Image (tube, rainbow over all chains, first blue to last red; front, side, top):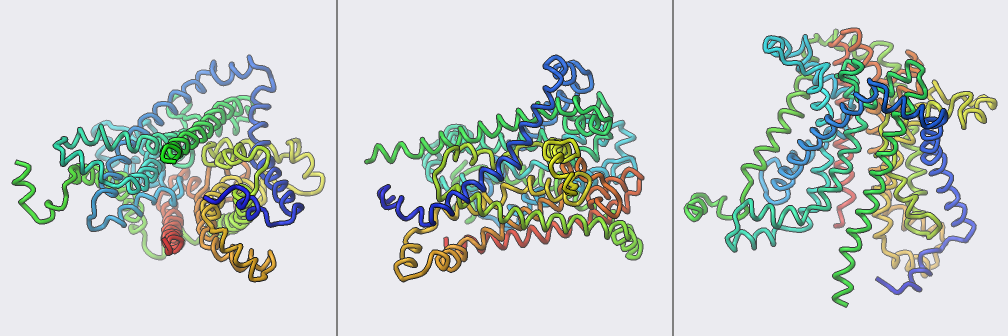
Length: 289
Length: 281
């Protein structure tokens, strides 16, 4: 890094008015697109007083049930994704095998495919007229219009999140410490718990945060598969849709406010972690100097 | 035992680290069950249609209108996001100003906020009595329940992509190049257009493609603001949903297959672009 004076000189080459115009534009973009909508969510949610908010969000039976539903669906699909992400990252970042690049690109598929199409796919598999529909009926297993369908769809949509965070971090760390552990006689699981997991813990946590945010908010895939039965298969985003269509603005915004609060917490957690990770990277440098 | 296993094959000898079988086996199982079989089901269902049936379902007048709305709105939104994203990334990397770190964090909100919430709020902001609508509607600018509304909400949903692809590149851009260009007598504009822009152009393209791909599949936010009027503001994903509600699974699948194939092509382009981005690494 060059000394600050030189950086200061080379960084601001534009005339001051251009610089301030651009900074003004940034304030404007962020205000109009992000800040005002967030403020509006809370304004409308609390416009009829805090009792009304509690009534709509926490006392209302169907809304409360939607919260539980979102909680369980998110918990289970994030858990599946943690196992998947760690396993895939280990395989892909530590070994070379044929089809490795293809496997990595395939995991990106859920980013590209419309969530609605994802819902449709599971419908075609497990719906009443689906490929496994008759078989599931015989055994009395319900997937579509029931919780397992919601979990499947949410897991599909969030599949890349944790894996994508872990793969580059594992590749950057390299296998040396793990090789050393194995050479010194550690068992595979000892190496995994004492070297691998501590090394990737920040990336893993980061991935979990992103994955949770996405899982809580999933709408398209879930709306196809849930059947939208109030008090049974409605998640929070679906509940918002239902209340919006019933013109219950207060109710819709009360749930929206809770979800917005969670996403703001997500952003704060993300910013904090970036701060910590940067600090922990900078420290050893300072010691060396 | 481990020594005999190590000797067994030449391949194993190089693999000192354990766990390939378990981790790869597990990942492949999940990918197959969760990704490949559902995807195959979709194409298998489409294959049960004759080509003319498929064509009739995938290319009906209503479907054509829906693709048109989806693509035009996504394209315009992606273009707008590319400009906004470039400004945001440039300012965040190059200038110091009040609230910079706060704004940097806020940029990710569209990734974190459930799309249904975004749709609900945006629909409300731009109605006749909404905070923005009360100023815009008297001027004849209708946003709610129009294509403009779809574009506005897609701009929100895709905002972080370009910023997050261009920002790291701008950060690593060598100041010496700019110094050299300046010393050789280039004007600031020449430096910008001939030194900086070519360096960030691949990242801009990648960001554009990511935004576009995301916008094409977007459903949650759009349904709230668009009103979903056939031939006017109905997007392709919504068409799939309404076909499903009519129990017309084959027709729904035909439209979905068109969307999926387009997404796959976009994914390939994005992968290619990312490789091009890293070509000097």
